[in-house]
Length: 94
Image (cartoon, rainbow, N blue to C red; front, side, top):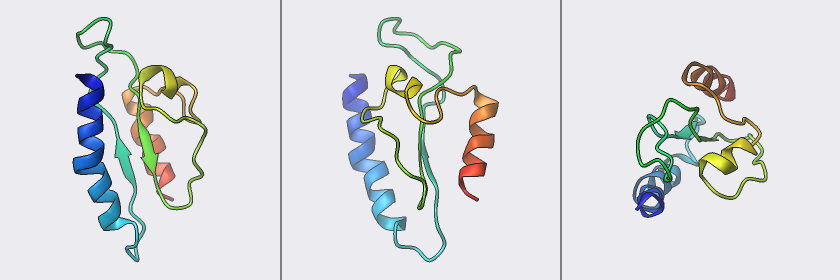
Protein backbone atom coordinates (compact mmCIF):
# COMPACT_ATOMS: atom_id res chain seq x y z
CA UNK A 1 0.00 0.00 0.00
CA UNK A 2 2.78 2.47 0.90
CA UNK A 3 4.61 1.86 -2.39
CA UNK A 4 1.38 2.23 -4.41
CA UNK A 5 0.62 5.50 -2.61
CA UNK A 6 4.06 6.89 -3.47
CA UNK A 7 3.68 5.78 -7.10
CA UNK A 8 0.27 7.48 -7.30
CA UNK A 9 1.65 10.66 -5.75
CA UNK A 10 4.47 10.68 -8.29
CA UNK A 11 2.28 10.11 -11.34
CA UNK A 12 -0.69 12.25 -10.30
CA UNK A 13 0.95 15.16 -8.47
CA UNK A 14 4.74 15.41 -8.57
CA UNK A 15 5.11 14.55 -12.27
CA UNK A 16 2.47 17.04 -13.46
CA UNK A 17 3.80 19.78 -11.16
CA UNK A 18 7.33 19.20 -12.46
CA UNK A 19 6.16 19.30 -16.08
CA UNK A 20 4.26 22.54 -15.42
CA UNK A 21 7.16 24.42 -13.80
CA UNK A 22 10.36 23.02 -15.32
CA UNK A 23 10.54 25.65 -18.07
CA UNK A 24 9.41 28.70 -16.10
CA UNK A 25 11.66 31.77 -16.27
CA UNK A 26 11.98 31.83 -12.48
CA UNK A 27 13.38 28.57 -11.11
CA UNK A 28 11.05 26.59 -8.87
CA UNK A 29 12.15 24.16 -6.16
CA UNK A 30 10.15 21.00 -5.49
CA UNK A 31 10.39 18.99 -2.29
CA UNK A 32 8.66 15.67 -1.67
CA UNK A 33 8.42 14.43 1.89
CA UNK A 34 5.95 12.98 4.39
CA UNK A 35 4.82 14.86 7.47
CA UNK A 36 6.14 11.98 9.60
CA UNK A 37 7.76 8.58 9.04
CA UNK A 38 5.66 5.43 9.13
CA UNK A 39 8.02 2.47 8.77
CA UNK A 40 6.27 -0.49 7.11
CA UNK A 41 7.45 -2.91 9.77
CA UNK A 42 5.99 -0.77 12.61
CA UNK A 43 2.82 0.33 10.79
CA UNK A 44 2.59 3.43 12.97
CA UNK A 45 4.04 6.95 13.09
CA UNK A 46 7.46 7.55 14.60
CA UNK A 47 9.51 10.66 15.40
CA UNK A 48 12.46 9.50 13.31
CA UNK A 49 13.93 11.68 10.57
CA UNK A 50 12.02 11.52 7.29
CA UNK A 51 13.09 10.60 3.77
CA UNK A 52 12.81 13.46 1.29
CA UNK A 53 13.86 14.59 -2.12
CA UNK A 54 14.60 18.06 -3.44
CA UNK A 55 14.56 19.02 -7.10
CA UNK A 56 15.90 22.38 -8.19
CA UNK A 57 17.49 23.36 -11.52
CA UNK A 58 21.24 23.04 -11.21
CA UNK A 59 21.30 20.64 -8.25
CA UNK A 60 23.13 17.55 -9.35
CA UNK A 61 21.34 14.27 -8.63
CA UNK A 62 22.97 11.80 -6.28
CA UNK A 63 23.05 8.04 -6.85
CA UNK A 64 19.88 7.17 -4.91
CA UNK A 65 17.30 5.56 -7.20
CA UNK A 66 14.51 4.73 -4.72
CA UNK A 67 12.45 6.69 -2.21
CA UNK A 68 12.43 5.14 1.24
CA UNK A 69 13.98 5.53 4.67
CA UNK A 70 16.92 3.22 3.93
CA UNK A 71 17.81 4.78 0.56
CA UNK A 72 17.51 8.30 1.98
CA UNK A 73 20.33 7.56 4.42
CA UNK A 74 22.60 7.02 1.42
CA UNK A 75 21.61 10.27 -0.33
CA UNK A 76 23.69 13.42 -0.40
CA UNK A 77 21.57 15.00 2.38
CA UNK A 78 21.11 11.90 4.53
CA UNK A 79 18.18 12.01 6.94
CA UNK A 80 17.42 15.34 8.58
CA UNK A 81 15.32 16.33 11.57
CA UNK A 82 12.35 18.61 10.83
CA UNK A 83 14.15 21.90 11.57
CA UNK A 84 17.20 20.84 9.54
CA UNK A 85 15.08 20.05 6.48
CA UNK A 86 13.68 23.57 6.08
CA UNK A 87 17.12 25.15 6.40
CA UNK A 88 18.49 22.74 3.78
CA UNK A 89 15.56 23.34 1.43
CA UNK A 90 15.92 27.12 1.62
CA UNK A 91 19.68 26.88 0.93
CA UNK A 92 19.00 24.68 -2.10
CA UNK A 93 16.97 27.52 -3.62
CA UNK A 94 19.89 29.95 -3.68
